[in-house]
Image (cartoon, rainbow, N blue to C red; front, side):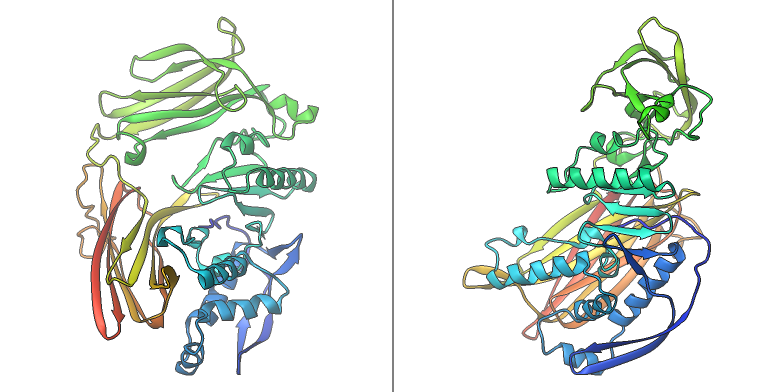
Length: 479
């Protein structure tokens, strides 16, 4: 899933009449849109509004088919949305991640798989329209930012205002990708490219949060600064009253002027005051890939508002060179919502020769610079048939999905709020169906309320050879 979130000024618009030629069919439309350009193999959009309108445009063309088009595409095993997006990309001379993934899937499907669990799922890289904007390196440029998916765990945002620095960081990330072709680049290797986080931002797709603090001005008042992550109130990663200090590092910001565009990291000793009378002293930050970080976990015995103070020193008995403070509110010491998941694959053997898979996922998109967060639900249903002892993706008569999601508060009770449907915790209700298809997708976005976890209930139905099969699944997801 890709996160596109920085708000820019309105883009320049121009009327453009666009014609696309599909097999035996020509469709024309008049759209208030300027097409993206291409730079360094990436699509380039003026700003976020330009990007969003382009997504709406290709969504409209590829999703709202006439009966005549549906009939035309039903004669091929290819997905009509893929055919249309191919034509759009071809018209601007661009080869997308979506196209490459789909072609790989088609080629592998010709051979088949011994086990459907080995069939790749590319939906974690976003919807088809989102993937249509990414190049083979999973990159797109929006305004002054290059946005790049590292894996289904991390996305990075490179500030392109200073071209020399951004070019250097992007080049280094591409080298790391070659060394880690599966996308499992250690997080600290990315962070090492810019400890200041002024030019490179790392987004955690699992937590739905930006990682590490930006140091700030490139001409700081202090020589050193502390950077790290403070996580709390998250049932996915511990109890509600647990805090985790993760990846804390002392950064020498004055080294920006000595050849390190994002500062250099130092081994340091830390004193931590948890704001309730408890404290720890002289924790040496010598962990991680480069021996410069420290992690600490603490559980508050009582609810309340607390000020956490972290002091860093260059030696155990030396003076304090940097201070970091946080204000947190511990609302509950409950762990009843613990150990939930944010995604799951379900496999369903509905006959001897037919199977289905359902990928349910809950995720958050963060919006810069105001840090608002939207919650999203994804459901991706696929159908398979066993042929000559190999499983292959296969069309069926009809597929349908009905998704309901309920939101819960810190007491693990349904969240009642006028914002929600029926005041009973529901925040999304979606139903879709499609005939003569091998897959069906829901990408549903919703509210910005802060919640603790939610359930996603999916009812799926497959009509095959005039017989209807149904199944229900539930995912309890952390927020």
